[in-house]
Length: 282
Length: 282
Image (cartoon, rainbow over all chains, first blue to last red; front, top):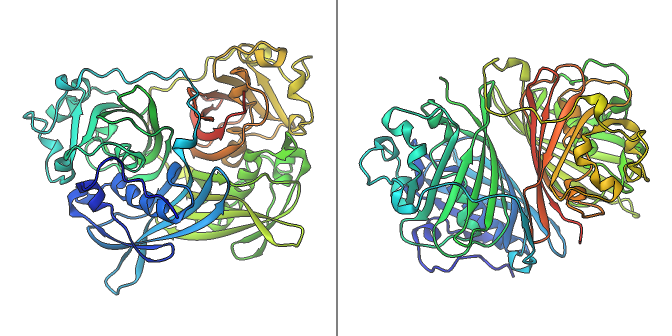
């Protein structure tokens, strides 16, 4: 029987809104919550967490190690289904596939996202760490800026997800909110969930896609739709807020990459992700 | 009808050895060549190029934009089949899935690799480039070291792929070959194909996984099996050898990431990739 990683945390908005109900083996009914919209579409990281939870139940291993998601069309609040397939079950890793489907006006299934993932058990990994990566250079949390700190007005406008997240942005990466983007493709923040739920591997799938896009700091407004997002979960996060750094180095031909790192309160690199996204038109 | 990107190049070892024969729509017979083995298993980038070629034929767009591959078991030289599925066809992007299968002793199909990919047309992209990425700091090609430059003996030992590649390693990243690894997770090289075939989007799928593993420079010997490898092709490469830089920053819990960049002779960042791999045991 699969363990469902629920974090430390009992009843939380995130756990309620990413709940999956097994209809039959490998098939899960879900209700996509309007609480996680951004630009009126559901946040891609929220959707990924739902698919990750379904795979945690379907696969013999509990934790996402690497999750590759290709996004086909925007998802809307309301009913959806996650169809999973177990592709192989190994001793330390198992792999599976999941599709998130919604329904068109005739009730036909429309595939929104497809995921390939390999799962393992983070608690079974050795404690050996050899890293040259450094935590993001971000000021202490109390010196960073949240949605309640006056401007940035754009952070809140029409984005229900703002209320769900306890996001404190590095002042060096909020120029976009007052009409003065830095021109650097960087975004850094302290990330938590508003109701205090701690991070776990599933919430990290949300975290890597939850900051404002780096394109804002490049002076580009509007939606940056994800084409593909791959996330590696490298370590079970310690309790407390995490730090997130997102960097874009190459905007070319109308596409850009976003590389995210997530660090926990114990200074461990707990997640790395990269996405390919369409750049907003300048 | 799909265009098959064949590069500039007519008949080459790479094109012959990655040829796919359409058995029926979406299903391709292939013959995996023993010429691309490393540690007696077939190189993951070579296999990815074969799957990429099948998808180029099956999908309405010719060029891989982002390809996510999950590796299940080592592939052996000999017959195999690639089964593809077209998942969606959009105006500028189409997406599909491919599985590489071989046969067990009873003739049953065994899935080796599964890929999710989104394809487009690189020639249709704008020339707009805003990049802060810099080409790798690598000496001129004539100051770099190939398999014929005496040691490193390990580069050639039992690895047929060595003959297929025109690989010239940065002297700063070959310490492993003489028993003096630098301790840094870096590998840099000039990359070409031995028969002079120029780079194209399909050969870039090979290039990102063709250098010795960064773990060698971390002092770890042995195979570093790929769990997952995602590659973004960002630009059609100009003729001439390309430069490749691979960096590992975080080796933890027995896994490591390898981030690769490929730059062409026109100083364009033509490919980015990241893989999650199992680290050799120390």
